[in-house]
Length: 283
Image (cartoon, rainbow, N blue to C red; front, top):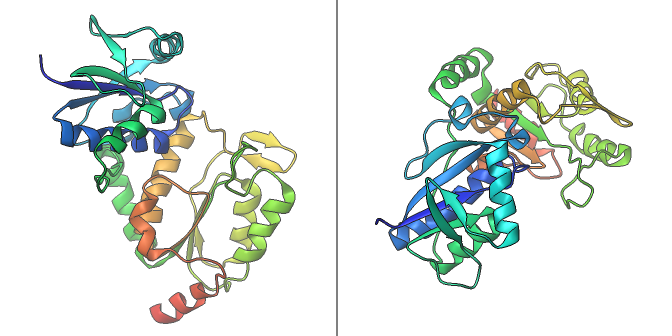
């Protein structure tokens, strides 16, 4: 039988988490001769979206959608030390520090990260490309709104307090971010992507020429309203925002976003006065 590694991420993992996992497993597989199958859990972590509803096929990786119930069974098998069943075959779960078999199962970033270290080299490129239906909409919006000539501003507000990245849903942290961003001159043309209504409204009131995607801020919190991460429409909106941020001339990236490695050479860091220079260069 051919060599195969089947992998999956935890039910709560988001798209950025899952694409990192695939990138790491692919790094291992390209050196070991394994083929790769990713079990894409249709769970709340990705707003119950199937992979093809959001993304184009991933070169070198077979994607299979699995239900939340099936993924939960896999998680239980991994936790109990049992083998994982895949299409009638029972696969041993790879444990970091052991030697991978010809056919095995790898669970979440613990497994994929350990596999990547077995053949250390430059990580292969793995871009999450929008599906064809979405790409048509994206191209038209970029052209109509001059996104290629704008400064992209991404502010992700983290709801998990144990995460080191800021800001969290804390008023002092939100205001600290805004104080830095509001140093950018009002005339700079911007595209705004954030899950915080407070952040969005404040930035829109500052920049006279701003673009942003309409969204529902359904999740109420003491510091304002936020996008509900389990909302399917919000997931599609986020994927559009990712594409527009990647198309911007320069980017301020607070909190990270999918594919943000593509804009590394275009990032602006604090202090944000450099944004004024970008505008001067444009005119």
